[in-house]
Figure 1: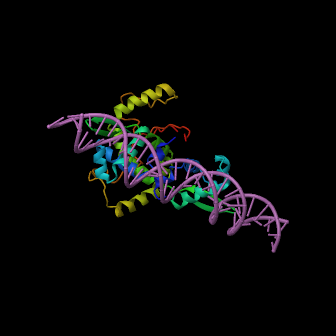
Figure 2: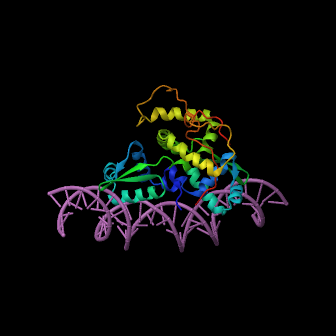
Figure 3: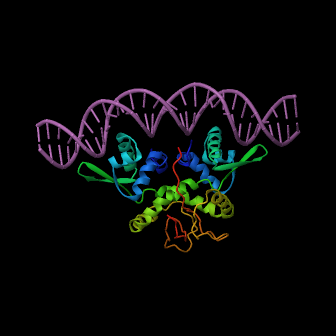
Length: 132
Length: 132
DNA sequence: CCTAAATATGCCTTTACACGTATATGCGCT
DNA sequence: AGCGCATATACGTGTAAAGGCATATTTAGG
């Protein structure tokens, strides 16, 4: 029924997932942090759970939701073909990213350690075998 | 219909994008290959174009559509946080993948080193059909 | 100009889904 | 037991988006 792409199409659901990356959260915490109604949160969590994106554990009256690691694989796999495409266009992409780095001074992780010259290859994966 | 996530939520649109990865295509070719109606193709291409995913060049009466490299960046960037999350769970992921490898038995290249420090990481190539 | 081919657009119907409000269920406490 | 907190579900509603069909637009060629 619902592909992973449908799941993450919803902004609130993406927000929830992003929230859960850092640590598990209760429904109430999500509700508070994302300022959405409690039923809305529960419903989205239901969807995420059915889709296998999150799982819940019981803590008294609370339900703690946490990410399931395999969840976004489908999307990542699909995206892979485009990464290959990008890599054929790295030059243009580099230029594009340089512009973004300048203008988008927003929530970039303060952990801007070495490799600050950006080893941008979609993700710093050493793999180059890449069975195609 | 703003975000890139909405764009790729549509299966036919994903199919079109996947088709364009290999090379540019005319509307008619897309119509034929994906077996969808011509108006449908045109409409999806309109959406993709407005969203900056593709661009078209004119060839007589045909319009040739091709991918724009920067297009799926938004998605990729968003996905990055989860890749970090996955990497924190490589062990579990490894186990999960081992199970899959077992059941799917795909001729695997000698890229396979058990307990290796993440030789597979975020992208693992695997091709499959869409499931709607 | 007129026609045919390729593509785009407009209108209409159907469906899906996100939300709110209200209510139900579960759990702990005294 | 009864109350209160935390979470889940039901129902009704509005909206938006996708598909089909018909038609407009563009371009090449006679």
